[in-house]
Image 1 (tube, helix red, strand yellow):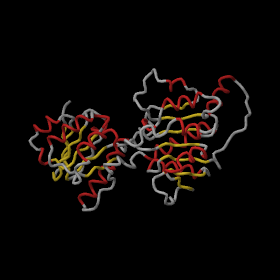
Image 2: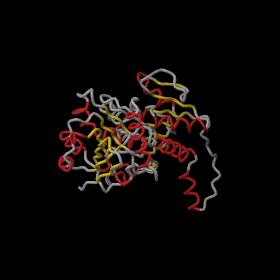
Image 3: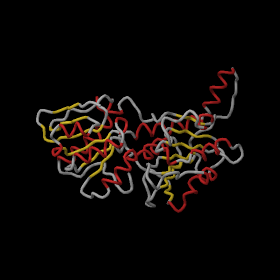
Image 4: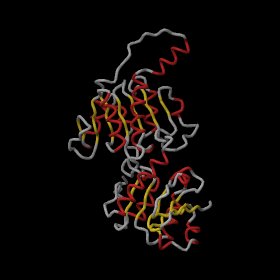
Length: 337
């Protein structure tokens, strides 16, 4: 498991990063004056450091440690009042948050909100263009040497509906607006949003699916959103509509999606998925056999600067803390986002 320590010249904050010390996230730890990082996924090693009472922040990196390591770290670091989830979605530590942090109003939880939203905004438009411009048909025509002068659709004037309207959806909406698309936003608040042409309340959920040419799911993974999109929602969609998912995999009923993709009469035209219920996606999953599915391995936001972007958000929270301001990306622990 190992342990790595990064320290600045003048140490004033001791931070534990719950992560495999050999992971790329650990390699990108920033050098910040006034901060010392201890990188380990072993609570025993942190305890052996003799400094558990000095730990002021615990950062959890899901790609480098199991959630159980976070429970163990919590037990040996009683004075910690600030937890940070490196990723945007805090469902990777959902049980820990509910069991340990929700009962503690004195403890703050922040996340990587906004760090990876721009790349996901690009992914949304890439997926929309992929199906709108019939890229698969174009590639098949070239392979078959078929001069197929079909009518080329455009995105302008089409309706794109976002299920969830947080940072990722906002970045997608900015790009969709540049293409002249109409934007619907399904969100808790019915208040107008500057990036949406219309906000759809919870009570009119199916309306968004009925009216949209492209439905984009960016909902966070919470106890309330599991299988939030299933058979009724896919049945409500237009037969030529496209479903795009880049939030959290368990929000979508994958069996219902497969049925919708394979139903030539009452199904939908296509889908693009970057997130799944089980990752890596099992080889026996029927999703692999859907020809009208664009599938990526949860890497739509895994850009060359992924590590640096994630650490930048933590630094923004750190700077806010030391300057006496409020944290930047505070998570509502009960809501899970």
